[in-house]
Length: 323
Image 1: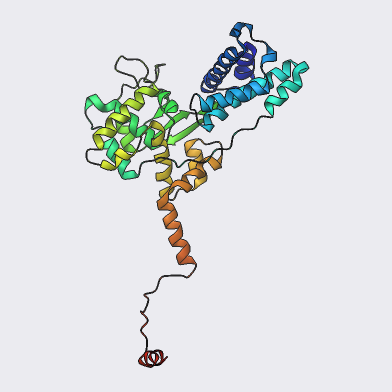
Image 2: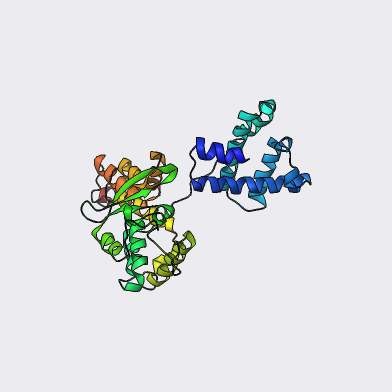
């Protein structure tokens, strides 16, 4: 287990800390499940206990008892399969046992509709923050999230040295797998960021909590919920949304699409690995579908013409009356 995390994931695969934590949690749950089902402590578990049937039982437990979705079930399976591959490389005598684990398929999942805010709703949310000195951090954070479409982990890892607040105004974001990308900044975002204490030589991240420590994901979620409730007083439609930091990322993507930006540009803007991930925003946006249908109707030469109501002639009525 130590060689899997330290030698393989960190040094060979170059996995991010987020991936390592996700794999840690998945394997911890799996070993606790094995311990309960075998009646042995985790310290006394053996490699012979890591069987395909045990993995299938664990996956069923994850969905049925813990109430996790099929997506979460597949994430747990990915961690176990990665560990099984590592075992296979170092324990060839149990190749058949590990091979059966690797042959367990992922569960097909349906594509859920993406939740996002329309531009006027996003403006209302940011407008609810205000421009006072006590809310400058919150305004800068929300503008940065919506402007760049950054993941919350990317926004929270921004340092002052990652900002370039003179032309060309931009921020360097550190994404998944150690990838970096540059995103342009609106003048409004730059103005909000300038209100924060910026020290390019500091090793501290940009956003802090009330105690001076790094702001957390839960802290960002709390901030967004607070201003959603405030903005909903004048925009009741916001009450229908469960607004999370990732919803602002989705909102940025949809706004770019509605503005006519090419999907490949949006892919690079958001840091997606695959164009298929970006294409989900097209399928979820009704306004874009409506415009596409109107363009297709017009292109097909089927412009709607005013219809003339049919009226029977007197001769026809005379004929029918004679029958």
